[in-house]
Image 1 (cartoon, rainbow, N blue to C red):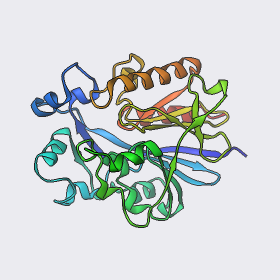
Image 2: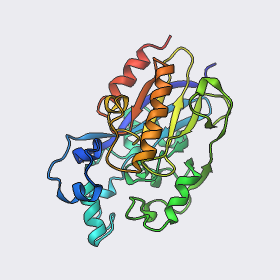
Image 3: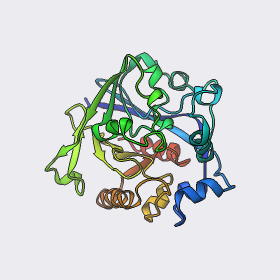
Length: 286
């Protein structure tokens, strides 16, 4: 029996960001963040849902509805102003992680493992609903919680270090697997080769991507916020947020892997085309 039974996507509301956030135009981040008057069209806040033989696995956990209902969710003062300049959210009452999973037939109690690509707010929003699950994050990313300037870098400790959560920090190890080239480091979540975490730093220091391998189905690569648009990724147009040189390095790794695996489906966290791309991939299951 194949360990992967089904892969789905839900969205915990939508987000609008600045055009320069999606595609770097060469201007300094602080400049466009303070001066831009434009927003993108609403983009999904995707959570990828993997039905594995061990239990339900999530890649990312979405945005917390409290971010639009609670006055004290975000920092106050100038830092809070920058947060509001960076993104604006539409999170409805039915957009919680629990409700989103229920809408496609899953009980949140069945979530065995939740993988967090990185620790920005729109990827950790479901943590309060996952006290029963194993939460996986890269050790490098977890270290950023206590780093100087964490709040300015989008890491809000108050929404991460919640009581009762079972964190598991992982560090991808060197692998000698020609099928993964050009990647040379990976972490096999269940030891069966079906779910592999690949380091793709740049957006944040410890950003992870998830490679999903199921026999008879195109490989899927969930890349978090490495890109916001697969077409931009393919052309090496990178976002305007993060460490540009590391984002470019990770982008080139993904693109080289895609060149070697022409059927690969790349699934970003906020690409409006991701749901359709995943549905097309599922229709090709043999």
